[in-house]
Image 1 (spheres, helix red, strand yellow):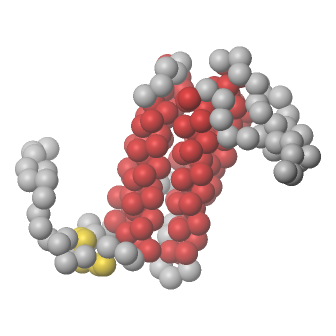
Image 2 (tube, one colour):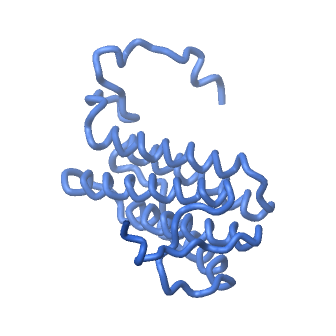
Length: 183
């Protein structure tokens, strides 16, 4: 593959539009473009997690997820094109289940935090939830594939479990929400 981005700026977006992969131009504030941006933000937030010391398997899982998020952005940029499939959802569920089986059951809500890597997981989880809300809005107006909807939903669960897993590995207990602290 040759150089696809020989010039970083094109000036084509100076009037507030951007190009989709099918060649059409849309306003930068359309819900489709907003959700693409949030998926990009989520991918960048996962990059923050990856900037922390992690075991090799966790590192590889997150890199694989980053590739899938890039594919989701591509799928959203080219309406009608499928890059995410049910097998991707199953893969994520399998890894989520493996991480979760070694964690103690939760009886209370936990506060985001712990180690820096775990805190970044919680940040990524909240960005992922926003992406999911935006996908729901987009789906009410245009087609969004079921595998994309499921993948983003499972990913927020995965990031929550990964935060707990990382804290457990680093011997940092979950901080449980104390409902009695009202003042």
